[in-house]
Length: 109
Image (tube, rainbow, N blue to C red; front, side, top):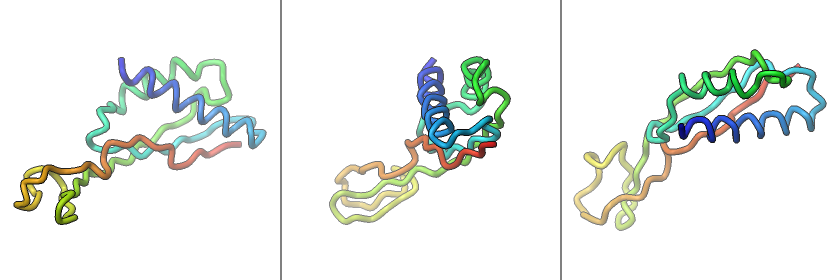
């Protein structure tokens, strides 16, 4: 159900931008989604098809680019691709990427 709110927010942003640019139609939306974002692309597509019905975004294609999780040690600054790759400082880790969902681009007509 989380994807419903995420998809609604994404569609609102897309429609706002399309309106600002006087678009007649949204053709394609490119999203960057982090591995740890808890976003299921098939669910986003499903909700998008329902929510975009009757809008200029109806029928638009959506593509997803996955970004890996990156964690940084707050003590030494070393970055790692996961908890298991962190340094030996035992200072925990700060997630610096991999949890985002960002609209990378919108193709309009």
